[in-house]
Image 1 (cartoon, rainbow, N blue to C red):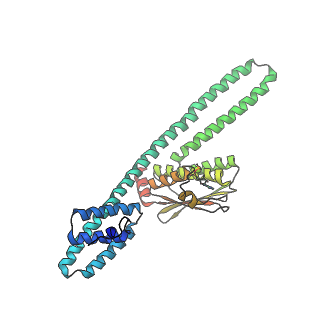
Image 2: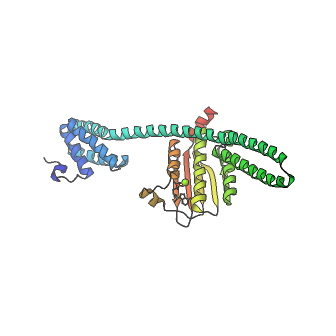
Image 3: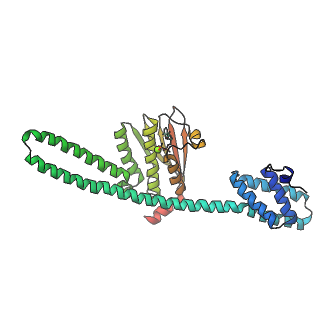
Length: 325
Ligand SMILES: Nc1ncnc2c1ncn2[C@@H]1O[C@H](COP(=O)(O)OP(=O)(O)O)[C@@H](O)[C@H]1O
Ligand SMILES: [Mg+2]
């Protein structure tokens, strides 16, 4: 009998038809070649983005059809065994892809940790080394000032004042880059500190409401801090918002955190669909969260602001934090 694919010449068979045909061939005559078709179908299913639910449904339907035709308990048994083998072979590319994703997540987590270490190093370098250089500049200026005639001393005072501002800003940036408060007191105080700085610089109110207490594992707190940091930066840079609201609360065993602005908004679908990824901020956010088992949903409408809703299941995180701290 000709297969569906052969009947159609070069046109690739509809997935379900091809599935039924390969499945039928395997249950009738078994063999490696038919199992090979199952494997290829599994790969095709991934490419065509078929979900597990769709495959399970299709498989179920195919078995039902065949069971109706099979006669006697022995044939039923044989059919069910063949169906199990066929499904396992077809799902093996999914298994491999899943392992690939797990490996990628582990690599991502490692990369984030390395990046965090680097950020820490830069933050300390800015704070300590630049701070010490500025102290040296202050001392040198004081030396020069002593030699200067009285009328130039006022100008020197202004230079000192500007240097003090540079020092203050550098200290602020280094703290925001990697706030010590993040390690000492946790992500919520760190976000308050960050929001205070952003709010002052952008001259924009940031309202924070938190109904969540307790510490989380350090990697989780760092990831949450980085995600909120990017969301605030976006709200200032792109949204031209009038207000930003940051809320954090618990919904049973899920930690929720929303960052909302009342700014310009944007077309989320268009951005994702066209692959027109201007920056790495939103992607980075999703990746950071997926590395700790969380998700982010973005809702935005032109002219009506943007909201990011982070959800992070807490059970594991809490269990780890109890053990770790
Ligand atoms: N809060 C926001 N309001 C308006 N537009 C936003 C907001 N957040 C993100 N966007 C849009 O999404 C794009 C991608 O953001 P992102 O991935 O953070 O990259 P980047 O900030 O480097 O451009 C931005 O260029 C902007 O067009
Ligand atoms: Mg950004």
